[in-house]
Image 1: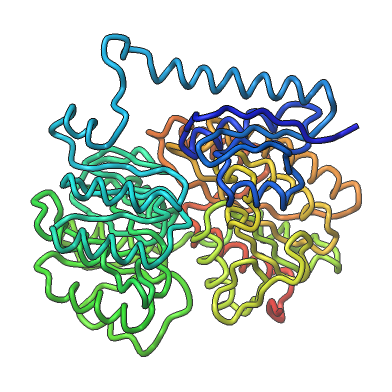
Image 2: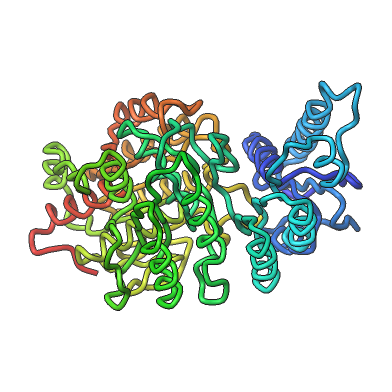
Length: 521
């Protein structure tokens, strides 16, 4: 019988990244249907109830809660494994500190480590603003990894910081590289003269890694959080970060990365960009707003293009985007072998900005897709769990990750969706991303390749060939080694593009190769 079982650890705190990793390890056990390891806040417990992992404990927000659902023997094994990993985390964090207990507050930490300049806040959203304010009062810049922080608190924190010459990255800021130190989800990249200010986590990763691949380097990559360029917040952190990079002697070029801002906010950001002595390259991923004045700014069409232009400007060359390679001949030939039922493009992404950019580029080519995060002009998917027509999904969106780890940490749910798309007789092209680096799965491809090979064999048995197109965001310096990941994917029959934009163009081109009259919604 598959039922839920739980354990409560009173007054035990672990940050969300550590808890997601433990959840991923527990969920992989045979016989486990669902599992979650979270702080027992009301928001987290509501998420558990939504995925059928309700518990009958009286655990509160200061308590750590482990809930698993599956067969009886597997439940015991899973709960024991979670406890073992939690114990290891605790003992590991205490190793080397036997002579000196770890600080129990930001003030104590700042006092002990007097040269600290930044605090990373990763507590449940309802407590994050209070902790961030403590850090700001100590004169520290702040990176708020936490999400679900009320916008009025975000505005108050950012105004308080800006008045004091400090920077608040976030809330919901998952990516940064400060002085060569990666924070959150980030990649190992060469240090150099290009600074990035990004309101998009995976967008910032794509630009940083592309700069590295082109032989240049990154001075700093400062995330602002996805709400910063909203009309309410008004880009307080992006403007502060731009001023900081302008004053940074190591930065010669600034790249701005965002989805389309509110027009008034875009005007404010670009006005400041024009006032700087440091040249600025900007990319607003998504449909273009013709009303925004971009004069005097080097504007890129894609994330990869922003990196290309920044590297050229840093080298004192004319800013030119590198042309994407043409559609591989074998991929075009493969398109001509499809059955009449195979008409649609399916996208399954772990990076939200990659999903957004793919939708936008495909829409420019005539493909109107459904999505859980539709760009302007696309449509909301009517059933998020079953694709209809062209469908491009962000599997890292909250709707898919409630009670589960993000697919960059645990790709299980993403892989299940890939299996479903390969089994759909209407799927012609499947495009997806693989994000590696700090915070991501240590082995993002072994289970994925199993899924792809099994799905393709089943499709072949039914007389169908599905074209697989991917893009790997990362570098050879990342522990997963991008070159090794790419080679394994290619060995499995995946066409691997050099950028997300190139993958989108390939997907569109191969779809149109199948339907000479053009791909339509």
